[in-house]
Image 1 (cartoon, helix red, strand yellow):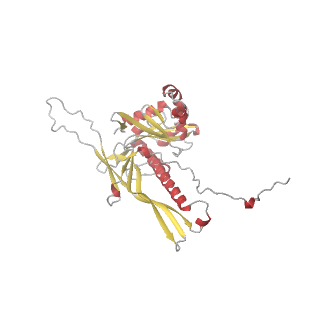
Image 2 (cartoon, rainbow, N blue to C red):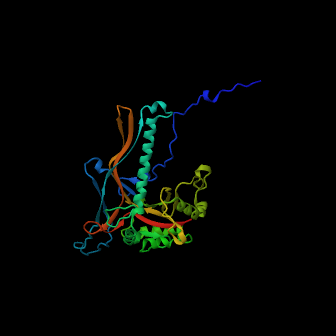
Image 3 (cartoon, rainbow, N blue to C red):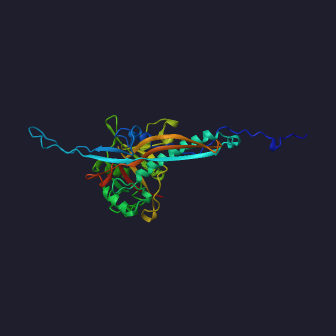
Length: 359
């Protein structure tokens, strides 16, 4: 008996009216953004209400004097309040895609919806990448910010000297030469472990000015460490016994040992950021090295004059349809210096930077 079959060219192919987009991570920094001065990424939208190109972020340093007691005279013994200023200039960023309206007839997906979705993803990725660039940026005058990869060795050395109280090279807290500091990082003593995290945290607490922790419920003090994936895995291994003994014994998906996610240790939240770039084989015996950014309050400034919005363009008598996204903003690592212009020996305000080796 001959069995009938349907020829390939006559078979119905049912296309999903949906589409698959390239996986783009959501902005992992969003939960650390806020308008108040305790947020690690301080957001200011003043320019969205008023015209202008710059926003000033103010810092008032804590008082360190002892005051007076008893019948001692207070007049003439007041302490000068340390007020510093950090200015951020915004700029416009745009991106767009375009298609011919004829292709809407041919396409198995909704091109208009697809464009909107990938543009929204691009915006999230763009902000995330600019935050990472800002965390690693180098400034020697407090106003010019250079991406780490583009900064000269001379500028990096000046930056290390200015920030000697908030930069660690593995287990060593201080090195006046940037490249020499990286070169001393080895895979034995200078990996990202609980011990070296404690050194970085101690730097943040003892820095002058102090890197203020993030306060929760007016009592708890926390720092957040953004780590390269390989360094995050090192900390995971370093915390294996601690987590095994200390976490609550929940079953299945409720147990953090199974679900992954952030690590918590000694008042620090360790968060994996896969997009943080490796510095390459710059460590001891050509070991790979990557940074960890331990942040407290007012680490970055995010100035917004115009939030992201969709823009459109139709041309060629309606045949060409373009869609884009536009924002006017800027992300900068906050630096505060001394002197009248706050530009002398500027220090990164809310970031302690650690460099660690891995294989």
